[in-house]
Length: 267
Image (cartoon, rainbow, N blue to C red; front, side):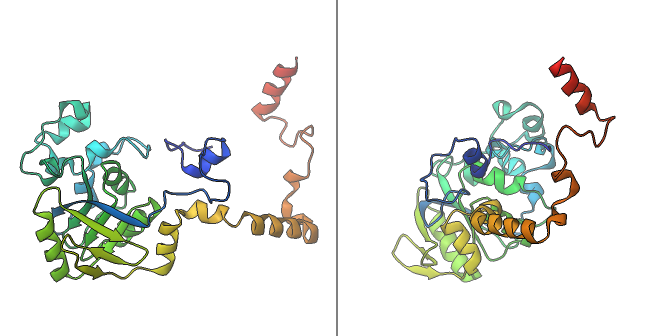
């Protein structure tokens, strides 16, 4: 078995009996329908994944705990020291927007520059942004891999024309300003009540609104999968494989370490 990502995804919590969702819900991600939150502006073009989370922080496969690493080179005066020792030695830069009062620790919506999330593929990028509280990013364009990784981690990326981005950046220039991002109706609502419509792929929207990641989508089809496997076994039993038909007592690989362990356990 490979490395386990911590904390476990919701569908693994279900298997362990730890999930608190209702019995008729499908395990996956938190549902994203509408978000009202403080908006911050980061109008820098070509913010790549190394700027989102520098490579020095890629020492873990945990989904959580990476919020302190997000935008480290923009956010701290000593990013290398933070990467080596930890957040406790961080020296925040006063000029970085997410370190300022009215944005720090409260921003949930980020208005970003063109081509956000470009560069190398690393899922740590949306992990770190999400862990610092950002749930929606609005830009004129995103790199494809980062864009899809956002959906896989319950985060909404919204694409808008530059003139509308400028309006939202103007709103974001005032600390503690809130926007509403309504995914169900596909619109961003400004503080003055103006509504800005955005386009969204219907399948990606369905997944976010219903809290479905890729494995959650698979688990939603468990009845069909089990029915298919049953029918396949009945019609084409040889496809099940010999190993599935051999009793555990038969040593298919006599020299395997398992048999020594099993013998010792029963001695």
